[in-house]
Structure formats: structure tokens, C-alpha cells
Image 1 (tube, helix red, strand yellow):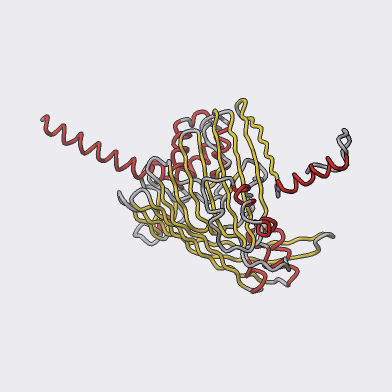
Image 2 (cartoon, one colour):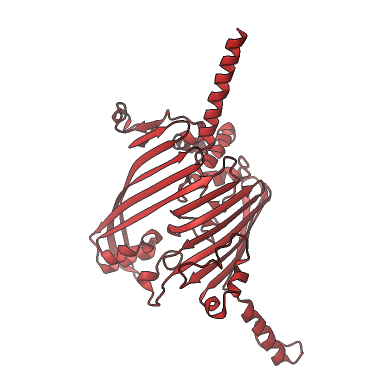
Length: 411
């Protein structure tokens, strides 16, 4: 009898361990445009998940799953509308929350077609899970009509259609893979309609062949990502959107309107400290508009960023950010350093190179003094040049002759 009890106990422990590994092992990133982030932000302000930090997006599916479990455990404190949203996210992130696939549906399985119109099922072309690997394959598509009628931008109309495939998964609870490919076409559009669509939709403005091809446009994003089981270290290499900074309308550092760009990223997350270093390639400016709208030749444009987020308490979060936009250098080890002050590194790169680059420094914070209220503030200093600052100070001293008058600004 005792031996049977130990056997049951051992099996139960192993089962729970596998369940926890599955639940917290999904390390794919949740796309930066997923509306779940708005839901998590609202739950943070309701002090249900007060440790959530909206200045760092995207985060892993496992992290989102943990937050949703906490919200589920406190569902008595949220509104009926939020309960309905939670139910939808509970289906979408079911495996990330519970390690289960009860509400996941293989469309081409025996029961798949029967549930094709069941809105309580998450549909996949194919999915597979076990204790060490997962695979989810999906198709997606959209059809939209964009238009305008006004004096400033004129009368425009364009019909857009897009379709594609997406695969994602996690291997051994540590390595994530993701790939999304799509192709789009537009109809009933002239050159003015195409320019209008690009000017009003950053996703299209950053897609160079949207303007050049005049019939088709394509899109892809993908990455490989490694994350430790305790989530203190993550490495990502690939192409996907990144957002940095606070802001409800938009983020000041890495905007909500940025398009995917290729990068390598290191994140260290330990208790109250979250630090990241990113080195990537840009296609023009932050929305990728250079090849279409600029006449200045540019052989290469890269970005290096450091981002340090400090959580002093559930009510006060502070972020420090710096970046260098590097022009006409395909790659430089000067800026490929996770532990350095980028502006200082840029100043030591040589006068000719430094003058071509653009350095930025920023600080932002969020204060949540009480439930359902937050105060956010961001400051960005663009193109900080200490050499110019010194020259202006010397000029003032020369002009003033030591008096208290000032004949020019310091900055």
C-alpha cells in the first residue's frame, strides 16, 4: 500500500513538473501589436498585476501567460467586459497558461471542420505539443479599403489585400523560433493613391517594394530566441518590431509605428532591474522611408541602443535609454558593446564619423499613485554633441568678457 502511494506521488510530481515546464516554457515573443498588451496595462493600473512594465514590448508568451493566470485568480475584481476579454485571451494563450490544448483546434483534423465556426476554439492549420517541443502553424489574411476626401490630401482610394503563413514554437523550453511570410496586392490605385496609403500607414511606408512594384508588396518577420528557464537572460536574433518607452498614444524612444527591423538583442532581467542592448540595421529612418523619399545616398544605416528599466516599487518605474544611429557603416565593433556609454563611444570614433551619426539620450518614468491612475513622462535629447556644447560655452565667455550677459544659447 505504501509502495503504491509513493508511486502515485511520484507520477503526480512528474506530471505537475511537466505541466509547469510547458506553462512557463513558451519563449516565443507576443507580437508588439497584439491587443493583449492594452489589456495587461489596464490590469496593471487596477493593481492586479502591478509589476507589469509597459515600456518594454514585446515579452514572451510565457510571461503573458503568467500575468493572465494572476488576472484569472483575481477575476472577481474586474468588470464583466474585462472578464469577456480575459476569456478570449485564455483561449488564445491556453497552452502558455496551463500547458493544455483543449481549446486549440487543428482545422484539418477529424473534428476540425466541425469546430471551424466555433468561436471558443483557437484555429490552427496544424499544431503539435509534447514535453520538449511545440509547433503551431497558421494562415492569415486581410482585405481593407483606404480612402480620403479633403482639400489637404485630395481624393484617394486604394483596395489592399494580404495573405500569408506563420509558424512558431519552442524547443526544450528554452529556444523559440518564429517566421511569418505574407504577400499583398492592391487594386484600383494610381500613383497618388499609393503615396497616400504609404503616408498614412507606417507598415506600408516602411515596405520599399510597395511603392516601386506598383502591384505587389511582401512582408516577413522571423527570429530565433534563447531564454533561460528563470528568465534572467534572453538572446534574440532576427527581425520583428520592438517598442521602448512609456506612452499611451505613442512611445518616444522606439515608436509603436516602427516596422520590423533586423537586430541582435540581449536582455538581462533580474528582480527590479531590466537591461537590454540592441544592435540592428535600419532601412532609412525608423519607419523605413529613406529609399522612397530621400535623395541623399546612404550605403548603410544601423542603430545601437541601451535600455535600463528600474522598478523601485509597484508605484514608480524609471527608464534610462540611449541610442546611436550609425550612418554609412555596415558594421562597427565600436558600438557593438553591451556595456559602454554609446555617446562616449561615438565621440571616440573620429570627427568625420561622429558628425555623420546621431546620438540620442532619453529618460522616462511612470508613477501610479493610486488605482486606475498613472502619470507618465518622457524626455528625449536628440543629437547631443559635447564638442558643440564646449564651443558655445567658449564663445559666450569671449563675447561677454566675464560679465553676466549672454549673447548666445548654450544648446
